[in-house]
Image (cartoon, rainbow, N blue to C red):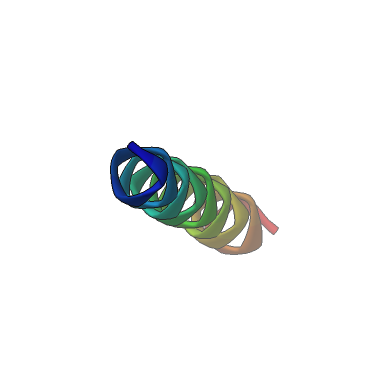
Length: 31
């Protein structure tokens, strides 16, 4: 069970990081 929680946590962190980089890059291009 803990393996599933860790897997979901890693996927969630990766998604948040990807979205943050995406919007950060867009904001940089707008500047």
